[in-house]
Length: 101
Image (tube, rainbow, N blue to C red; front, side):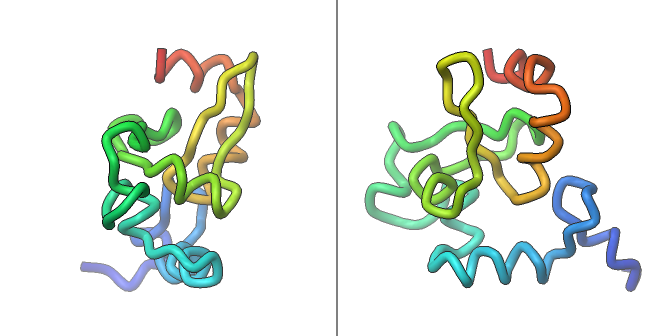
């Protein structure tokens, strides 16, 4: 293991694991909830999706929406696993929307 902060970054955007944890803590949701874990509505099958930027990363729609980790594009809502994915999506939404289709 390395001490390089980039090694622990979320979505290779320079956001460190502690930044992600802080974002989750401030929002009242743990990272497990953002990634589809937890209980209650945030853990229901209808609430689950995958991040269009980090394909295969599970996301709880309710948890992501609660902390603003989503974008609307061409009438559809896309949910993200971390704060770094929104700006990546904004740079090329058509590319990332196709990942979900």
